Length: 150
Image 1: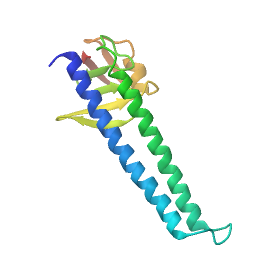
Image 2: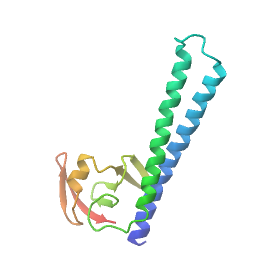
Image 3: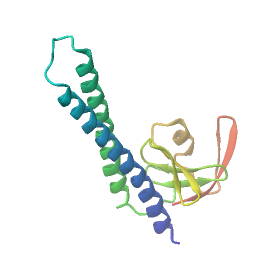
C-alpha cells in the first residue's frame, strides 16, 4: 500500500468515527427537542424540566456542530499529499504509538491498529513537530523513535 493510500485510509477511518459522533449527537438533539415539545408550553418561568431539555438540546447541538466541523477539516486534509515531516495533516508512526495530527478526536481504530487523532495544540505535537523518520522524541519521560511519516 502506498503512503498516500495509507494516509487516506487513516483519515477516512477518523472521518467515519466523527460521522458516528455527529449522528448520535443529532439524534440526541432531536430527541431532547421532541421531549421539550411533547411537554407542552411553559407552566411558569421557573419550569425546570423544560429548561433542562432545552439545555440538553443545546449541548448536543454544539457536539453536532463540532463533529461536522471536524469532518470538514479532515476532508480538507484528504486533498493534501503525504508528508515527510511531522506537521499538521501528517500520520506519524512511532515505536510506541500512531498519530494523526489533525483534530483532537482521541483514539480510533484503523484495521487492527490504534491511532490517536491529536490537534496541533497538544504537548505531544510540540515534541513531534518538524521531526523526521529515525528521530527520537522524549515525552512524559519516555523516548519514542519515529518509524514512519506519511
